[in-house]
Length: 366
Image (cartoon, rainbow, N blue to C red):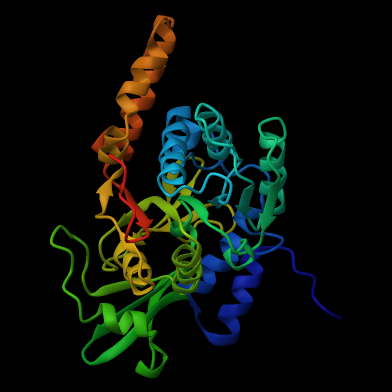
């Protein structure tokens, strides 16, 4: 008789029992994307009622200004009737809705909308949010490889940090990979020897690089997202061939060193081994990896900058003042709180970073 699978914990335990170990990558992949029990298969994961909140859920200003940034790219490259508007990992559709509203304030026609989303429940939420927002056709895709072959105006907000990662270290001439074992008191993190023949080229290359000047991370650990290179190469190839631009906003830094994997449940940090499928697991993005892939395709990656600095440079303070004009004292206080949360270095302003991917001939708008 085949034993019925009743929980994600059981599935992971079976993996550990079979091999004595499950890699961090495979643990994250199951915890986030298992078709039945994965965290992103739940109906409510984003927003105040969910497990975590993103910048678009905090303030409409985030989506409006990033939308105008993309609209400027559309105008600069004269893509008015040629481009597609793309969001990777669109959450509940809030960012795209705000982006569309801002786009309509320009003289540009709204391009067709393309959303890369694998979660059926989130697709349904996006369709509901956008149903009354756009006359443009909206398309959903399971992967970036399904995006149309035409100029793309892409926004990726908290997309790459949700890719499962592997972690390696090189100690006493031995490579080791991090994972989970069954210890005396239950699951625990552990390192297991791994042949150098099984180390990804990207990890070996990173091991030869000096850490970023500003890093305070444990430089013995290298964090690597196996799916990132193919995703970024596919997007970069389209941008190179057809034109367009990509704006990446995410937790991240300028190298792959350190243990940056984190777990959040009900808006609070929890242990990585907290009940699988009940917490959001993310890892800081190595923006140097994104830049290298884009540049190898002949594109330009703008210098990495903190989210707060970027949003101020594209007018978030002015937009807050505009929205505050004639508003009630309560709304003014709310707008100031939203602004502070997005740009204050102690809030989201420093940990989140911004990088634009452009064709070499394109200038980044100030």
